[in-house]
Amino acid sequence: MLLIDRIASTRRDAVPRAERNELRFHGRPPVHVSGDAFAGALGTARFNAHLNYFYGVDVEEAVVHAVELEVGKGHPLDRGAVDVYQVVYGTTLDELLAAYRAGRGLKDEGRVRWADWKDFTYWCFRLRLRTQVPARIASDTRKGIALLQRLRGVGSDESPDPLRPGAAPQEMPEASADVPIVDLRRHF
Image 1 (cartoon, rainbow, N blue to C red):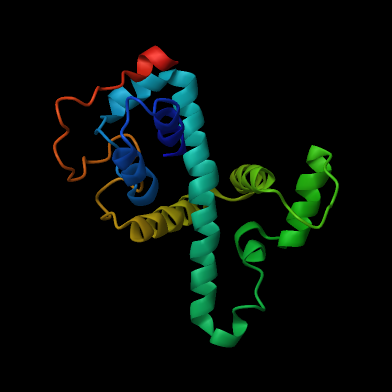
Image 2: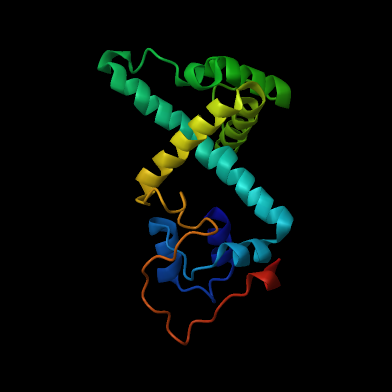
Protein backbone atom coordinates (compact mmCIF):
# COMPACT_ATOMS: atom_id res chain seq x y z
CA MET A 1 0.00 0.00 0.00
CA LEU A 2 2.88 2.33 0.76
CA LEU A 3 4.21 1.82 -2.75
CA ILE A 4 0.86 2.68 -4.36
CA ASP A 5 0.51 5.71 -2.06
CA ARG A 6 3.95 6.95 -3.14
CA ILE A 7 3.11 6.53 -6.80
CA ALA A 8 -0.26 8.27 -6.36
CA SER A 9 1.40 11.12 -4.45
CA THR A 10 3.88 11.77 -7.25
CA ARG A 11 1.07 11.88 -9.81
CA ARG A 12 -1.38 14.21 -8.06
CA ASP A 13 -2.68 15.37 -11.42
CA ALA A 14 -3.62 11.78 -12.41
CA VAL A 15 -5.08 10.59 -9.08
CA PRO A 16 -7.76 12.81 -7.52
CA ARG A 17 -7.45 13.72 -3.83
CA ALA A 18 -10.60 11.76 -2.88
CA GLU A 19 -9.12 8.58 -4.37
CA ARG A 20 -5.77 9.14 -2.64
CA ASN A 21 -7.60 9.58 0.67
CA GLU A 22 -9.62 6.39 0.07
CA LEU A 23 -6.30 4.61 -0.39
CA ARG A 24 -4.62 6.13 2.66
CA PHE A 25 -7.46 5.93 5.14
CA HIS A 26 -9.51 2.95 3.96
CA GLY A 27 -7.02 0.87 1.96
CA ARG A 28 -9.08 1.06 -1.23
CA PRO A 29 -6.99 1.60 -4.36
CA PRO A 30 -8.36 3.74 -7.19
CA VAL A 31 -8.47 0.75 -9.55
CA HIS A 32 -8.28 -2.99 -9.03
CA VAL A 33 -5.16 -4.55 -10.44
CA SER A 34 -4.89 -8.32 -10.80
CA GLY A 35 -1.94 -10.07 -9.20
CA ASP A 36 -0.32 -10.80 -12.54
CA ALA A 37 -0.74 -7.22 -13.74
CA PHE A 38 0.64 -5.87 -10.44
CA ALA A 39 3.66 -8.16 -10.60
CA GLY A 40 4.20 -7.34 -14.28
CA ALA A 41 4.00 -3.60 -13.72
CA LEU A 42 6.47 -3.71 -10.84
CA GLY A 43 8.87 -6.16 -12.45
CA THR A 44 10.42 -9.14 -10.74
CA ALA A 45 12.85 -7.30 -8.48
CA ARG A 46 10.34 -4.72 -7.19
CA PHE A 47 7.60 -7.33 -6.80
CA ASN A 48 9.95 -9.54 -4.76
CA ALA A 49 10.86 -6.51 -2.64
CA HIS A 50 7.14 -5.84 -2.12
CA LEU A 51 6.58 -9.43 -0.95
CA ASN A 52 9.68 -9.32 1.28
CA TYR A 53 8.38 -6.17 2.94
CA PHE A 54 4.87 -7.59 3.31
CA TYR A 55 5.98 -10.84 4.95
CA GLY A 56 9.13 -9.56 6.61
CA VAL A 57 7.68 -6.42 8.17
CA ASP A 58 3.86 -6.28 8.04
CA VAL A 59 3.24 -9.93 8.85
CA GLU A 60 6.13 -10.07 11.33
CA GLU A 61 4.70 -7.13 13.29
CA ALA A 62 1.35 -8.91 13.26
CA VAL A 63 2.97 -12.13 14.55
CA VAL A 64 4.37 -10.27 17.55
CA HIS A 65 1.04 -8.57 18.20
CA ALA A 66 -0.92 -11.84 17.82
CA VAL A 67 1.31 -13.53 20.40
CA GLU A 68 0.92 -10.48 22.62
CA LEU A 69 -2.86 -10.90 22.44
CA GLU A 70 -2.55 -14.63 23.21
CA VAL A 71 -0.36 -13.97 26.23
CA GLY A 72 -2.82 -11.36 27.45
CA LYS A 73 -5.62 -13.95 27.46
CA GLY A 74 -3.79 -16.08 30.03
CA HIS A 75 -4.22 -13.78 33.01
CA PRO A 76 -4.69 -10.02 33.03
CA LEU A 77 -1.88 -9.57 35.57
CA ASP A 78 0.60 -11.45 33.36
CA ARG A 79 0.32 -9.01 30.45
CA GLY A 80 3.27 -6.85 31.43
CA ALA A 81 5.33 -9.67 32.95
CA VAL A 82 5.84 -11.66 29.74
CA ASP A 83 8.27 -10.46 27.08
CA VAL A 84 6.49 -11.35 23.83
CA TYR A 85 9.82 -11.37 22.00
CA GLN A 86 11.00 -14.11 24.37
CA VAL A 87 7.97 -16.18 23.34
CA VAL A 88 8.38 -15.57 19.59
CA TYR A 89 12.17 -15.45 19.19
CA GLY A 90 13.48 -17.16 22.33
CA THR A 91 15.24 -14.05 23.64
CA THR A 92 14.19 -10.72 25.10
CA LEU A 93 13.54 -7.53 23.19
CA ASP A 94 16.55 -5.85 24.81
CA GLU A 95 18.84 -8.72 23.78
CA LEU A 96 17.45 -8.70 20.25
CA LEU A 97 17.95 -4.93 19.94
CA ALA A 98 21.52 -5.24 21.26
CA ALA A 99 22.32 -7.99 18.72
CA TYR A 100 20.68 -6.00 15.90
CA ARG A 101 22.60 -2.83 16.78
CA ALA A 102 25.87 -4.74 17.07
CA GLY A 103 25.34 -6.35 13.67
CA ARG A 104 24.50 -3.02 12.05
CA GLY A 105 27.14 -0.97 13.87
CA LEU A 106 24.51 1.26 15.50
CA LYS A 107 24.87 2.97 18.88
CA ASP A 108 22.27 2.51 21.61
CA GLU A 109 20.69 5.94 21.74
CA GLY A 110 17.85 4.80 23.97
CA ARG A 111 15.41 5.29 21.12
CA VAL A 112 14.75 3.53 17.86
CA ARG A 113 13.91 5.54 14.77
CA TRP A 114 10.91 4.39 12.72
CA ALA A 115 13.03 3.28 9.76
CA ASP A 116 15.39 1.40 12.08
CA TRP A 117 12.41 -0.27 13.76
CA LYS A 118 11.17 -1.53 10.39
CA ASP A 119 14.68 -2.78 9.60
CA PHE A 120 14.85 -4.41 13.05
CA THR A 121 11.51 -6.12 12.41
CA TYR A 122 12.81 -7.50 9.11
CA TRP A 123 15.99 -8.60 10.91
CA CYS A 124 13.82 -10.45 13.47
CA PHE A 125 11.91 -12.11 10.62
CA ARG A 126 15.18 -13.36 9.12
CA LEU A 127 16.30 -14.56 12.56
CA ARG A 128 13.03 -16.47 12.99
CA LEU A 129 13.51 -18.11 9.57
CA ARG A 130 17.05 -19.20 10.50
CA THR A 131 16.38 -20.45 14.02
CA GLN A 132 12.92 -22.01 14.11
CA VAL A 133 11.53 -25.24 12.71
CA PRO A 134 9.42 -24.86 9.55
CA ALA A 135 6.18 -25.95 11.26
CA ARG A 136 6.57 -23.21 13.89
CA ILE A 137 7.40 -20.63 11.22
CA ALA A 138 4.26 -21.57 9.28
CA SER A 139 2.09 -21.56 12.40
CA ASP A 140 3.33 -18.15 13.56
CA THR A 141 2.99 -16.72 10.04
CA ARG A 142 -0.62 -17.96 9.89
CA LYS A 143 -1.28 -16.24 13.24
CA GLY A 144 0.08 -12.97 11.86
CA ILE A 145 -1.90 -13.19 8.62
CA ALA A 146 -5.08 -14.10 10.54
CA LEU A 147 -4.62 -11.03 12.74
CA LEU A 148 -4.09 -8.80 9.70
CA GLN A 149 -7.27 -10.25 8.17
CA ARG A 150 -9.24 -9.45 11.33
CA LEU A 151 -7.79 -5.94 11.60
CA ARG A 152 -8.43 -5.17 7.94
CA GLY A 153 -11.88 -6.77 7.88
CA VAL A 154 -10.94 -9.32 5.22
CA GLY A 155 -12.42 -12.82 5.24
CA SER A 156 -10.22 -15.86 5.76
CA ASP A 157 -10.70 -16.99 2.15
CA GLU A 158 -9.41 -13.68 0.79
CA SER A 159 -6.02 -12.06 0.66
CA PRO A 160 -4.67 -10.76 3.99
CA ASP A 161 -4.12 -7.39 2.38
CA PRO A 162 -6.72 -5.74 0.14
CA LEU A 163 -3.90 -4.32 -1.99
CA ARG A 164 -1.96 -7.56 -2.20
CA PRO A 165 -1.82 -9.26 -5.59
CA GLY A 166 -4.80 -11.53 -6.09
CA ALA A 167 -7.04 -9.58 -3.71
CA ALA A 168 -10.64 -9.36 -4.84
CA PRO A 169 -11.74 -5.92 -6.03
CA GLN A 170 -13.58 -3.97 -3.39
CA GLU A 171 -16.83 -2.21 -4.01
CA MET A 172 -16.00 1.23 -5.27
CA PRO A 173 -17.92 3.82 -7.18
CA GLU A 174 -17.47 3.74 -10.94
CA ALA A 175 -14.59 5.86 -12.14
CA SER A 176 -15.62 8.82 -14.18
CA ALA A 177 -14.54 8.97 -17.81
CA ASP A 178 -12.49 12.13 -17.23
CA VAL A 179 -10.10 10.42 -14.76
CA PRO A 180 -6.97 9.27 -16.56
CA ILE A 181 -5.71 5.75 -15.94
CA VAL A 182 -2.10 5.59 -14.81
CA ASP A 183 0.07 3.04 -16.58
CA LEU A 184 2.56 1.96 -13.90
CA ARG A 185 5.00 0.54 -16.43
CA ARG A 186 5.75 4.01 -17.79
CA HIS A 187 6.84 5.29 -14.37
CA PHE A 188 9.47 2.65 -13.57
